[in-house]
Amino acid sequence: MKQIRVESLLASPQDIVTFQSEWSKGGSGGLLLLALFAGNVGPGLYMMSFLMNFTVGMLVGFLIVAVGYGLPHLLFLGRKERFWRGMMHPDTSWISRGFIFANIFMGFACLTMALGSPMLANMIPESISIYYNPIGILSSVFAFLLAMYPGFLFASVRAIAFWHSFLLVPLFIVQAFGSGIALLLVLAHAPGVSLHGGEHLLFPEAIFLVTSALLILGHLFFTFSSGKAGRTSVMRLVSGSFKKAFLLGALSCEIAIPLAVVALTFVGLNKSMLIPAELIQLCGIYFFKYCFLNAGAYNEICSEQVFDSIYSHSGESRPFN
Figure 1: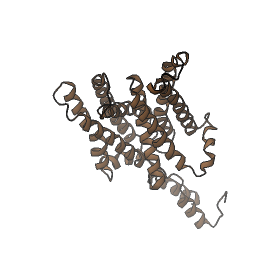
Figure 2: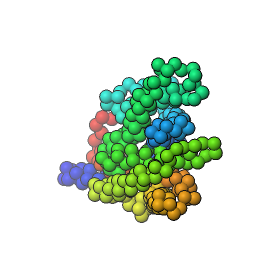
Figure 3: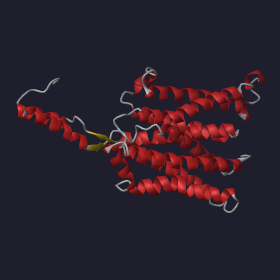
Figure 4: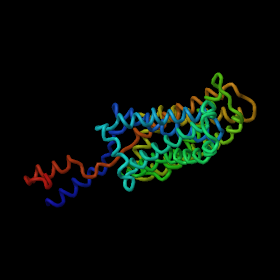
């Protein structure tokens, strides 16, 4: 009789779905959201700017990573004087790997921008300046790894179905390139700034937007099919409390509006709305990160309430107490 009751109590929490709040609420949630956004846009802008030989974009991308990604992570730590310990376990921790990617990227990016700076051109010997391209390629490789790393980090969280997805890595990479092109085009239209060949980025941007849409839809489909926690997460976005933020803020702003404007601009019908559409796209990516963090839900398989109920009625003491 007692065995039947225990089994029934242990089975009931599987139907209880709880949304995580550690990484989405309060000050810590705001810092993580900012870092997740900056860690996507900054590397993407840097990579695309290096490809286009756009020094202003490289500098802005570096600053976004340093200030928008690095500083929130430092503030997120409980013991900030021990930040160096974040690099100590790259063999087992994606957080350590991300920490290493970010620091190596910033180091190579500084060297690349110094070698390519017109102000320092007369001070750097030609025997050293020839390393601009090799070091720039290395910095872009680590920018790519930095943009990719959050996908692996969240996908490793098996308890949360909405995060545990093999599609997150390509999605975050595609969003990095898409947001990088968007911010690059915005910077290129700033007063006193010039960029040659920016119009050639419209077609790749359209490809990234379509690919991002397909990956998001695929992610929603596979997550919805993964179990109750996954279905609850998807329903929260498409019909629940985050419906407007996801459908209007994320999907419409990140994909639908920019794709329509880019298509019209590409065929020469509408150029005046391109920059506003790029800014809207960046806002949409921010909304997507916001919804992504708040959609994480898990099943309470062996909750504290269950064990308290079991042992309070049986009169036995809980093990490991």
